[in-house]
Length: 336
Image (cartoon, rainbow, N blue to C red; front, side, top):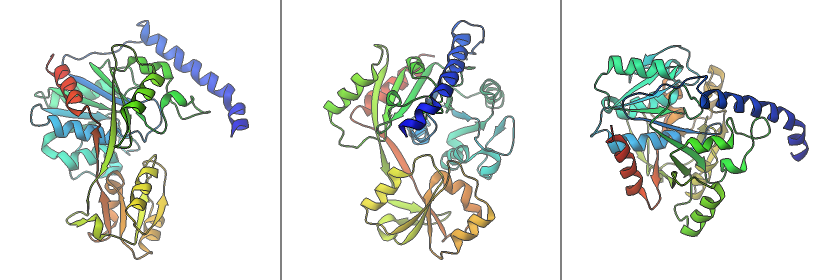
């Protein structure tokens, strides 16, 4: 692995130069960023996927949807359509993207969900079609600087801090480490719930945050029940199944299920994988129930009957400073 990194290092330097020039074009105003006169919160990361953006967005929506008219905007990764589109509950994942459909299926009337490759056009269309919108969440948009959000939240995982990673193709970073300086908040996600104050301090010192940046730590909580389209089963009563994942990092889920003493066979696919008919038929041939993530459920549910496919919801929870975190968000929102 070390020798491979050495071979790829020149390409990483070239990529880093391109990233540097792009940021400077924005920093010097040669390329412009649009700022909107309403609260816009950007949630993203420096690496490719798997940092827990969707659970955090869902948690923020759950917290504030009764107080504010909220909307989420993403590009709708791997969707077959293009341009701006409002997501409806009866949409299919291939048309709007699995995560946007997951948000709409979960929150329905509580949240306007839209997709658009161009974030500026996306926001303008949301405000045109939903003029009462007073808070917009930009999903996976930290590296997209065409919009200057009022608040930027950067996520990095406990076991793979961005500070320890490298730019593509040597590492998994799609943006430079110094870009973290633009974040108002940094959240270290997927931490153990028992994370000590001393370890939090060690990570804080390692990240070397600016004085104006807030640092939080979050853990993933798994539901005690699994869900099909119409039914609910206690996870404790569910065993001997096929686990199907098409997410960036399924390891925490696999470890959780093993800790619960579950018997399963794991079929791992790439993040946002679009399942073809042969793959669907292979999974069905096992004659066992399928357990998957909520995101994958959005792509698979049309191909299974109600008793054949289940998903396990997860929640993000800020460790120790949850009240402070939401107070900081509310203070920002109410400043407009």
